[in-house]
Length: 477
Ligand code: 4AD
Ligand code: MG
Image 1 (tube, rainbow, N blue to C red):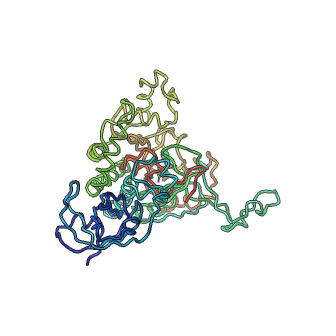
Image 2 (tube, rainbow, N blue to C red):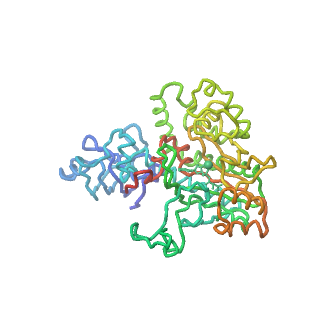
Image 3 (cartoon, rainbow, N blue to C red):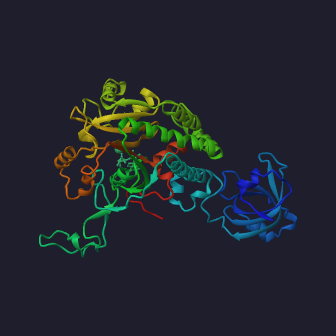
C-alpha cells in the first residue's frame, strides 16, 4: 500500500488503488464525510467512512483538528465538488483535538484572532496558501539568480556597522543590563563585551555583499534583517527577509533592468506553478475588495494584477519629474495629502508613492535620481552635485518594494560624504579599501521579501505573510 499525500492523490490517474494517507480533519459531517487536509495542497480530500463498521467511540473522536491515519480505496467521487475520494477501510486517530478547546473552527476567523493563534493558523486555507506561496517564491528567487550567473552570499547577521546610517539597530551584547563594565568616563566599556566592540543585528547585508561583488562580480544575499524602527504599519516588520543582489560593472540603468526582470520572472514563476493557491487567494481578495468603498477598490483582481505587472514595462521617472507631478496633483492642490509637496527636496511619503503608482501612472514605477540628503551615504553622486543615483521601485497597494542604487566608487567622494555625515573612516576601513584596490562601477538593490509576498498573495497586513511576525511590543512564539 502506497502512502501518498493529498496533492498526489487528487492528481492520481489510477483508480481503485489501495492507499494510505495522513492529515488533519477539517470538517466531519453526517458521521460519514471527512474533509481531510495535509497541507500539501489547498484542496481537501473527501474520506467516506463506513460508519456501520466504525465504532461509536472512533466516530466521536473524528473532530475538527484531529490528526488521523486513513487506509482505503481511491475511487471516483459519487458527490459533487471533487473528482476522487477515499472509501475508508481503516481509520486510526493519531491525535485527538478537543472541539470545545480547539481555536480553529470551520468558520471565518478574523486575522487578528489568527495572529494570536499564529502557531495554529497555518491549518487554515488562507495561511496555508500564503505560506506555500512564500516557500515557492523563495525558490523562484534562488532559481532566478542561480540561472543568471549570480552566487549566493551569506552576509553576517551580527555586525559592527549601520549600513543605512539610520541608527535603527538592535544591540547585540552579552552584558547584564545593569552590570555592564564602565570606562573611567563612566561610559559602558564595550571593549570588554563579547566581540570587544559595539555590535548589532544587521539592517542590510549590502556593504558586505559589495565586497563579494568586487571579486565574484554577481552575488546576492537572501537573509533576515532587523530594524528597530517604531513603525506600526501594515508594511513594516522589525525582523524581515531581504534579497540583495550586488553586481560589478553595472550602472543605475543596468540595476533598474535587473530589478524589473527579476520581479517579472518570480511573478511568472508563481503564476505558472501555484495556480490552486493563487485562485483561492484571488477569490478571497475579490471578497475583501467588495467590502471596501467603491473608490478604494482595486481595479484588477489579484491574478490579473500579477499578470499585468509581469507583462508590462515599469514606468521610469526621475524624482524631479515626480515632484512636479505631485505638486500639480489634485490631492496636493486640495490639501488632501497629510504631507503637502511644496518644493524639490521633500522626502516622499507612502501617500505620494501610492498616488504616483495607483492614480497617476497606474503601473509599477521606478523613481530615480533622488536628492542626496534624503538617501544613504553610499549612493553615487550625480554631476549636478545634489542628486544621487538612487532608485526605488514602487508597487500598487504596497508602495516601496525595492530600494537600491549605483554605489559611490570614487574614494575621495566617498570619504568626503562620510565626513559630512560623521561616519568614522576607521569603522568602515574595509569598505573604503574597495575604492582603493580595483574600484569599479557597481550597483545593487534590496527587495523586502515580505512586501513581495504581500503583493503576490493580496494580504493587506505584512504580519500575515511571515510565520511569526516581530513588531513593536510583540515577539510572541
Ligand atoms: O530601502 P532599504 O532600506 O534599502 C537597503 O537596505 C539597501 N541597503 C538595499 C540595497 O541596496 N542592497 O530597504 C530595502 C527594502 C525596502 O524597499 C522594503 O521593501 C524593505 O527592504 N524594507 C522592509 N520590509 C519590511 N519591514 C521593514 N521595516 C522594512 N524596511 C525596509
Ligand atoms: Mg528605502
